[in-house]
Length: 176
Image 1: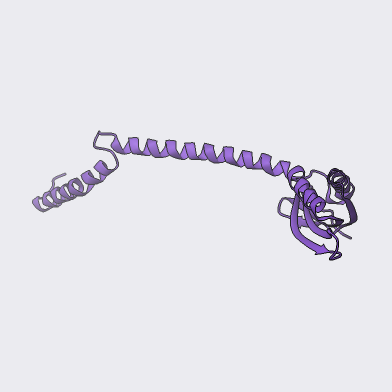
Image 2: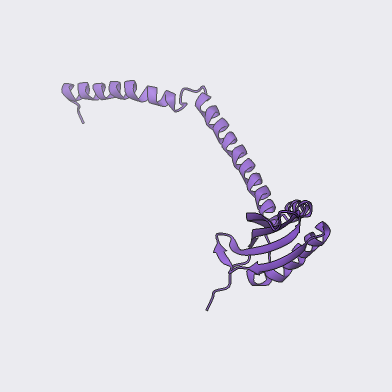
């Protein structure tokens, strides 16, 4: 097959265009033999892998921490367990739990939440001791609301009402 002069010129122009456009593109992709771009890609990959490993370890640590802050019992089984724990804290602080009212369990993202309202009447220093013991000894109990009320102006007796939230990994039973 014979190529005309005109076709030869067009082929030559195409080769020049490819050379001028294609060669810089190949250099950017690391085709210039230096391997600089490949090294940069390896560094990026290594950084991404290191970050991924760090994040996995952080998620694992947070999962352990969350597990330590939740109960595994079903929300319906929590009131007697919680009352026993609160009684221990109250005894240590030398106060009495006057009322204990568990609420209706609520479904949350990771399981269930049981709201509980308790009331304690005690001298102010003991009530504060109870709060501190509750905070330090019960990581699985979250304080949502607290209300202090003085019962008598001539006394240091206070009424302490606490709204607690207890979280569980077990799902809430469907109500009928």
